[in-house]
Length: 261
Image 1 (cartoon, one colour):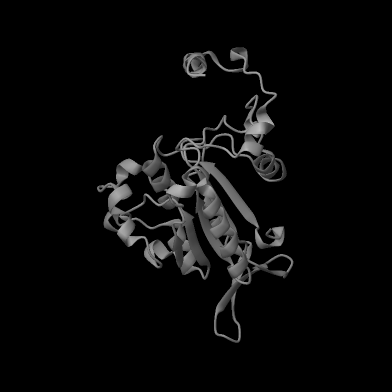
Image 2 (cartoon, helix red, strand yellow):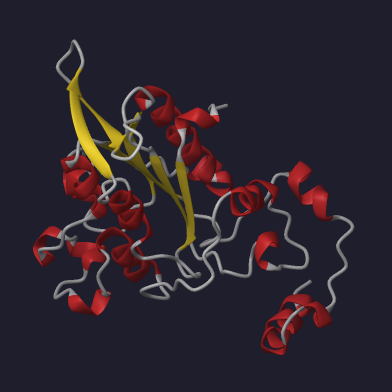
């Protein structure tokens, strides 16, 4: 468990869903707008601790922590809070209920790497000369959101799927990321592969809670088929699928799915 005090902003996106390409950068800019004056302090170890002071009230507060959860191939309609008739996503729904739900943001690409490229750089994928899924952002001379946070005194981390450059370059320091950990899981736990990703994320939060941090948490579900654990599958025993609950554009896929049982 992680206390909610350790997390100030939690951004949840689907790589092919309605997402905010500049949302993370927008949160960063909001913390340094004209009403906020940055104050740098040094602790006994000499580490910088960035705080912010409200120019109107004079109140000094620590700058917010930011976590970006990226779900692979999560459609905008795949969540209960977005109207899915059968989905049960209470934790994500609570984030939408208690936070802010974006209704008019769109992905920079409908496939994996283009969507990630937009989120990391705020640029349209077609503006990059080289395919960053393999070649990365440096060769394209693109500034990343993690570099912005890193250069402003944040601890920065990334756990989970990569696909924003050659995995040989997936190491601490790339794109201004202090800590990089893939944690994809081995073949033995392939079906439950995101558990190790979120375990690594929780570990990172606990280890860095004393300083402002930014963290990418990029999962693999629902990009690939999964075999859910039995107690989770049992939660849907009462579901009776009716095609009338879905748009007509989905009926052919539903018919195919039913034919395959």
